[in-house]
Length: 115
Length: 114
Image (cartoon, rainbow over all chains, first blue to last red; front, side, top):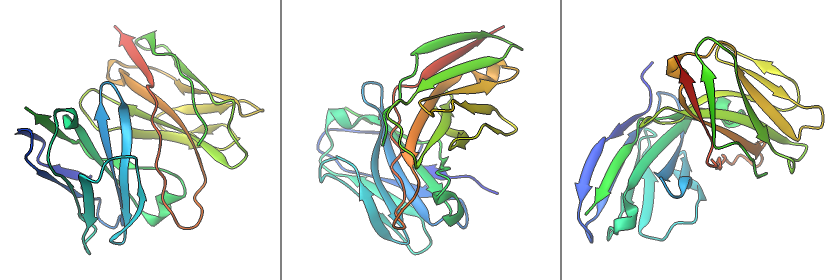
């Protein structure tokens, strides 16, 4: 069974640009959550989607947005990029069975560098 | 969610048991203890979780103290591939159909030495 797939794996942008990251969850998983990981702040929750609805949102500015499609694939977008947005962006999925157990399946991440 | 405290780093010899401690003194009755690990430049990997009983799976064992204020993750026979950052996380059980937002702290960097 394929794992969580994130694309692109690496990308470089400049300040002021925008970026869209994609996440394909494990087949059958309807919940997708996104995390930002930086050396200074560690792993921080961005938002979570279930059946195309955002259910939770972390403490990030409105420049960070996301959505989920009917096939459970998810995208996140960061507009007006800042240097501090350089990070590893991780996507995680879970099934209805693992929501209660808290078991998340993470992708390899998309490493964004903002110059 | 309850806060956790872990040592920033630990060393372990290959083939020996690695015992990673975690303090969660403010844990409440319905909160579970989860362990994840992250190998460099990869996404975190779920290891194990428990509520109050000790748990064991193919990867590790989780020992939770009777008062639930601390726990220990045990890797019985550590290998070089177990070198990673290990995160101990405490969160409440699901309610209202909402998913979770796991709060990862700094974790413990476990280095397994040959």
